[in-house]
Image (cartoon, rainbow over the protein chains, first blue to last red):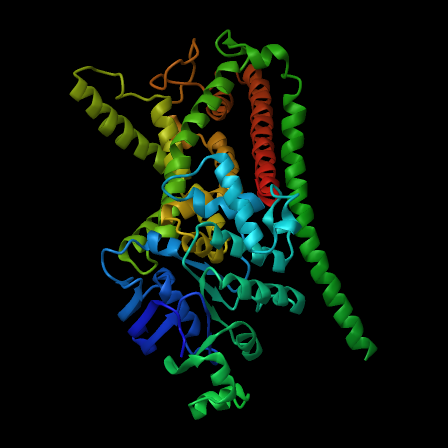
Length: 255
Length: 304
């Protein structure tokens, strides 16, 4: 199995909400510059696992973790890790488009502006243009960069949110059901985009849509009740899953 | 069948009538109050009335020092109450853990503060600000009667204290309305907690904070009890220049004109005029705040 270099590795990872165990002994290696899909029934912990990779779970009270998540060989849960730095390396796109009530330009420039050295205006304009082009929305918004991002359609907002994440030049992009709030045409655009983005970025996407996982991902992890049931190349998992549970889920027996 | 329907109809009409007459009652009371003030006061209003000081034992002349003092003290009050109130609300809503004992304590304190009668604030201001802090300052500076006496500063701080819960509640309300997803979005882009508050949360909370400011201005202008002992003067022959001087203010002036005057026939028209001016001033201050609020709101929507 060809996986490229492995820069993101999850090792014996457990997560608790207060006393409840939400993730149990997850170990998997996420290949670089590929799309890895996390699938599983509702409440199986797929979003929780995703949010563990940029430590967004810390926003929630009573979360405790054990085990390791290694990025470039460094455990991101080590005490001396700077979360702000980590989140610049591991970007995130949320389930519902969540642009700030600011202009399109300011949305995309936000992450860069919050950094330690804010570039000059021309450099910032370059970054915004590059990011919007990468997110395949430049042509639609180039004449209205200084209008509010809230005026855009849901699909456009989501691509602005992707552009916003790209602007800080992350290594990994986490996507939490990024198309679940969008119509089929907007979804297709996002999927196309994900497919192209993997040339530059490592992408982890949570989805409950099996077809979507099959379309966009090279690798798939199947989670159930907080445990990793199966992890491997998407094609193999869709056609010839190793576990009976995976097969039942994929064929729509439950979920 | 028809009997039942009739009965239902009558009951329904009765309820509409009851709620409707409650509305009418309130409108009537408001009209009577405003009518009395306008009819009794409009004759007193003139350019001289607004720009001159009282003369002849306060039975003639204008109310300018009271207008000046009110604006002075309200500005000082806002300078004190807005930053502290907003900071407290930000702490309570953005930083504090809901179950934490200190958080519960602060919240309880804020709620209790809101229920304290204004006269108690006045007495507290006298004891705490003037005697304890002011007196202490004077003693340590080796002088007498600069800080340890009623003045604009202490009156404004007393008003600020009284209005603190309002700013806190209004700000918290505004913070609560901002989607959690936007905070998460900012954090996920590598913003620090403070950056997400400063650049994403607070700008959106400004309209709500301004709502609090509107309420606080009206209440600050209307309350007499907190400033009676802490800074308001019966009569001053000059305009205060420093926050350490006493001041005249409209609310107290109205109280003085109507209850403390030896020549009530001469002073009641002045009191009516002053009331009209007070109402007009609070009204226009409210309008200004509402305009600023709707401007920031539409700017937010436009995304600047």
